[in-house]
Image (tube, rainbow, N blue to C red; front, side, top):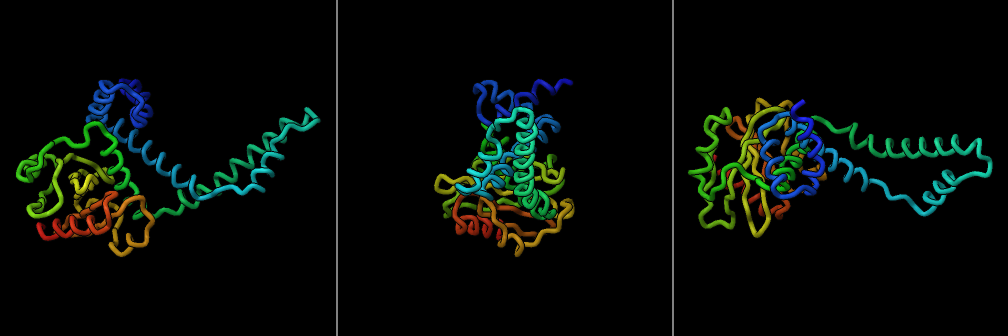
Length: 249
């Protein structure tokens, strides 16, 4: 298939291990190819899942010693392979036991919040995080016309500490939406806007407050649209930008 050569470059692309020229080429292809875009998103989700799962368990010194004893070579060669396989099976069982609570108990709402975080990370990791570069809301908002099936308002940022960097199209639950990126004190904040009825999971703002997310996030429904404000800025800054959007809508 035509995309096979591009898919082979996704891992080094996401790890930043390709030359700058090639990085731009892959980035442009990922933006235009739904298959490669989905592949890149799956890889980002897997990296985050592994990172979270890896922090759930720290082996004790006793456990390490026990495991080393289990996999150590034995004097009887004919049993060595069987014991090694048994040790490997034990490791797989332990890893599976640790990972399954994280991967198996996520509800539809958890999945949505996780995907929103992935979209934020993927955009900021890209060499071209926005498709339309402008600090003027009157330039960014019209850019989305004809690209997404709804309209929305952008807030006036005068007398605030926020600045608009630009916007891009994005997808959540295979639903097209708008992705705006703002800057405040060298922190980037993503604002996502989607049609509420197009999302499979019914979201609850109160549910979000109990989740352990790698970023601060606020979400709400207004005028038939679902908004997400997410970033590594302070919770106060996330709340301030959310209030500006609520007032503009």
